Image (cartoon, rainbow, N blue to C red):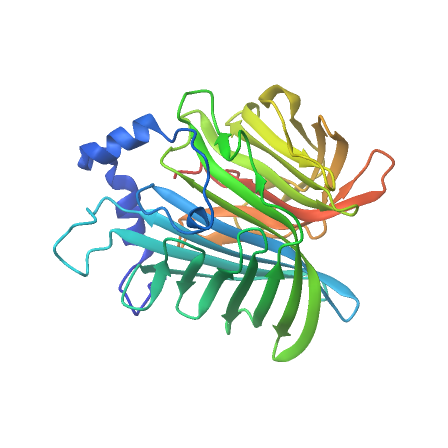
Length: 368
């Protein structure tokens, strides 16, 4: 699917992705070295890091409308291509911007989603430095306010999928720095890591439009911002990840990088109880055990839509609220993945949280 305003197509993206770091020795060296621990500084680190290979701002949450809790997602990806930033042509695509937006429509029991891609610049797409300001045409995510009192505005619309939202998201808690003060390991080798922070328990209000009908909505959201130079470990085919806003105001993150045989190559996560310091999990302390499997009629990928999750913060069950929340993003990022609204249950089966489950690499090994 081309972006007619820019001429970027999936073929262009695959060309950039497949060209390899060998085309540019400096980039190859950066990828080999990976990222290193450093203090995160705000508001600067709210913004883009164009010197790194890949970056995303990822917002998910629930929206209560007419007694039904829908799920929503908007994600902006920034990717540095192999084209040098100092290329003399202003049309050279040294930075690409992708965006995915989705609405888990619990009234109709289906996932509505759309995607976009463009080269950065020309007033069409941007990922600004200095603070969060990412956009792709009329899809936007922008932050303002002091670093400790962030307010975001998220906007997306899709005529083809029949949905739109315009949401204000306000921080209710301090930033949550993942890993070691924002340095999050993603593999066994030094440098296989990202800089990563979250904003859980965002208070949401705004407008949701479904098939032309507008409703005022309120809800709770979660924001992740992550950037890295590191490609996945060669053994990793994808990952499983959960970000859960707990009913008591806490926040739970858990993830694992997965080998082709389903075993964990690396794992991690964190837990923050209300008003307390964040506790990071060691890799061996987190296990994902698959439960019920749903097979996609489109991709034929088999996804565990229920999990038993064991962490130092407790043992839980993760349950998708809708089986078919698979996103086919081959027209933008080139992958098929599952990402959707889910609930978190304790060992007694009581719901203790709600958030999002993401599963990649089930329809084919993920390549970043």
